[in-house]
Image: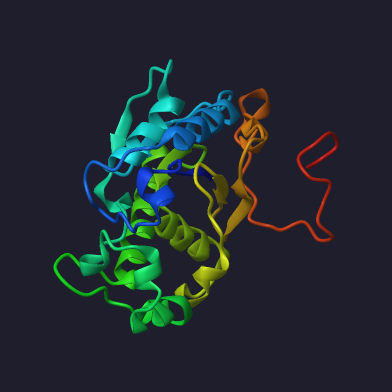
Length: 236
């Protein structure tokens, strides 16, 4: 089974200003965002990653930089984890965009949305390339791999929706806060969402234990009937 830690970038100057940054270059973390990224790094301090991957945009690179500090593993950049291409919506205030008729389609039927203008991407296309990136890195790190991906709110929500088996039109029900961490474990039969939108709690408890006596145990795709004992003492 492969374990993915999804990290959203910390609060940016665009977030605090109520602006849809999209793929605009030069959007950096603000003071709050730097503190959030440092807190996320503390939560992940005892997790060893087989790969650390990020969107190319500065706010993600800055956020994952806190996690990477002091580690020998290099951060890899994957363009398929970049923010959705919002086209002519990019750079506009959220208040202005909320008055656009397309806004309601984004809320209720995102799988039908194609953002207007140059560079406008469909939300379905965004979802497909993000999920494909996860599949690629899952295969790259292997069945017992643990990896970190730093990306953007809508991209992460699309990955979570896929893991939950939700249609993209339901992904607006998911909340992903700045610098939050979501953990997904991929097994042969199904993914398990182990933690959702967490801030400020240690994450090492989600790393699978190593095989005992050098024997590799076949990963289970089964959900424990009744919910099980959790991952504390006495869990299985």
